[in-house]
Structures are given as structure tokens and as C-alpha cells.
Image (cartoon, rainbow, N blue to C red; front, side, top):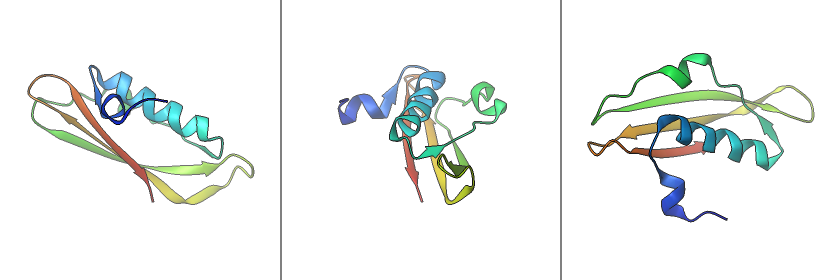
Length: 87
């Protein structure tokens, strides 16, 4: 299991987003589809970007009444701070 510090800070935007995708997939309850723009959108230094994505129940294939909320903040050092939660 990863520690909190390695779950929060990433060297690249792709690594942070892949971590979220893998974590949701490992829970084996929800599916998530990232839009293509999420992988290529540039985050400027000192700014953040937020995404709100619908979750789909794997068992039924129907959309859940929950969303995945992702916030990526690009620090001045170039690293990315990741925050995500389901609600």
C-alpha cells in the first residue's frame, strides 16, 4: 500500500491521472471514462484545474448518483498535487 505522501505528489500530470484511474479501477465497483482532453490539458505553474466526472456502476452499467472530483495543482517546483474524492 502506498503512503499518503506518494499518493498526493506526482512528477507528471499523466502519472497523477493514471493513479486516480487505477485506484478507482482497483476498487472494482465503479467505472470511469476520462475525456481525451484530460490527458492533454496543460496546467500552468501555480494554478489548478478541476474535473467532475460521472461514475458508472460496473455491475449494472448504469451511471451512479456519484461523481469523481479531481483537482490537480501544479506547484512552482513543477510537481503536481493531486486531490480526489467521490461524492
